[in-house]
Length: 353
Length: 277
Image (cartoon, rainbow over the protein chains, first blue to last red):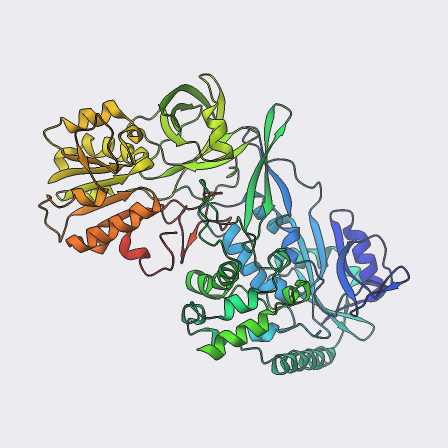
């Protein structure tokens, strides 16, 4: 088993700064002297040195991983020239990425931007060049329900290396040739430990799995096997949509924060005497999302847009790509100022059938 | 269909010269365009037209797909981009992306009766289809043209329409909802000029293009007459933004209008909700 100590991990991250812009998850329980009301905030911060607030394990940061692969605002064309506009000098190395972002998050984003008749050159380049140092979840928070969506609370795929936090450091797993090369290059930082250390990791995984399952039980979240019966179609004329959308303030946070949501709009502006085209994240919850020229809007009412959001996640994607576009990360539950809870909506949909 | 080519920027428009601008009606203009790189299309496919610095919008060309170096696009003034299109002059530079989507499967129409059934500004894309059909008219058993406009003043391409009306090889009828003093033709909704057709309903093809309300009641009328669902072709114009099946806006059920359409046979989409909206 490969093993890296805390000190050596810090050294590895320092070394990575040479070739990458390194981002690490940090956890804050206060902002200056103000305590954060509801527990803690976890987010990605560009790595400078190994500070105490860096938390590799625990749960997903609030920002979805997609932000490192399709920026919220990106120049995608300048004038009529065929060259792809200049991007970041260095690719990103993102540390502490969790399985909800990796598995279904990438499944959807890859389906849209990569495995298609038209490849998005920006996404494809980022997928090739960015480095992902994943990690196991070491706890579940209240909103976690990944296992109901068919995911495990530890990385299963789409990582270069994975870190499982254990006593005094991390067990290291290789997930790609890029990860293999990286470890070879920094072989002096990696130790070999006995297979018995895997038991510590497995026990931890088991404990977190139980924590997630206990959340699912407590909130009565239907598991993905129950989604299979055309729940959107069967609830098409249900009151659920209107009732659940009554408090919505149309901020779009649920879609912006979602690791699977991929919609964007193209926005043109003048760049001197030339055109500059931007790809900007969009949200199907916003009123004018589906409006056509002349003013017709097929989803003029808020409840129709809520229904559409669920249709895309739980009907469209399973039909066209064989997976649900929900990872169970719970970010939309935390983000919603109107307390619209995807777990509760799903339960109502399944119960109605 | 274009395959993934990573040197290609899918968001880049091709530099295109405005050769001419023709006023068709107070709200409709046709721009003749010459892209500076090759851009050919099949009838029914659409393109994204960029007014530099203003924005991009989807249009179906109205010219013959057989003309390779130029393209006509007929555009009604309805929004931000189309207002700027109406201000274009000869010599201006715009951008084009595409063509996108799937057009009309003309080879499948061979040896069958074909009805081109349009309303309002739907005549613009149907002009391109008519050019393509008339180019190979001997391939079809018979060609019908049925078209309705609100008033005689709303009929665009007047010279061309007159030319079609005089063709012996085209069964031609048009109508207006409301006549003016000079109009001597039929008055009534477009659905009222289908009754005199004598076609083999098992195989006859109908191509419908017009405003949503016309498409809806036109399709219902065709079904009532006995046309088969899989023989009715609809041009679904949604909010097609990227044209690439990525941005999400133009979804219809399990399809994207930009990639799987914009032309769909009715049987493919009839079970989806709210297709006429």
